[in-house]
Image 1 (tube, rainbow, N blue to C red):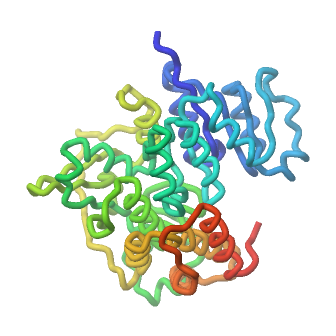
Image 2 (cartoon, rainbow, N blue to C red; image 1 turned 135 degrees about the vertical axis):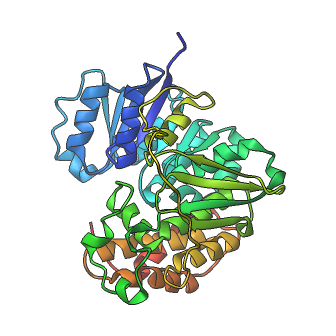
Length: 385
């Protein structure tokens, strides 16, 4: 019997975290979850702890955690409070792999802590690489940490790139579902309601990433993430609309060969690939039903209706502080749309205006990145809670 890989799931109560728990439970003891973190959904976090009996549970929202009754935690589980506890567990010698699934910029510091600890880091949140790609990748190189992408698109690229050498890659193509508005006119986009934007045709995700899919800002952030994760220039990264969301991305090599990874839209597959890497095992993810007829469609994206893609390429080329500012502006703009104080079609233009007005630095320190993250949020005014 091989020793189980010990796993910390940061962001356990979100959609990625819940899928990760399913994968770990079904792993036939190849994986052992030793830490879980949650922010606001503490009832679910408690139920997860009762199921898995991890060594640690981390409640990062101090105000809610102090008012919550954790008395029914398993006796072997230690309760830790506050975001700083993530950094402690991320570097703990009893943790082999850290799944970083905390949405937004809040996941940056714990991701860096896991990398500093030389861990296997399964990256499910785009923000660390979008905000601080050069810092993240250089720290991983220095410490020997392994970065494994969990985003379905980046996992697909990671797998497809094994078909050749990096210097043979002509370009990578990220697929995008196009969200619920891929056929809408610009006039229609000005009238989009919150309920319509949250109704994704393919994936079931949290509200923030669902809105990002509807604006195609998620693909812009993925372009930036791919720029640093695969160390490729922005000119070699493209996107294509693929409504079925079955082919998750392509790699095109110089000889014209195109290698793709495909599977039904189910995040449990890229999660399991990261958890078991470099092995492949039977799992709980859906499989393609080859007895059923189906077809795939591809369309070039319309950058006039969805300017986020152009913005993503510009930020990927610029590097420096641009990613952190774009990410922060988008987080607040999405919050304002969900609160009813911003129109859907103003999310991306608002982000672009903040980006153009920020004091750009080409080689920023982490402190500068964090300061400009805060600056961008303040520029957009009060945030919802």
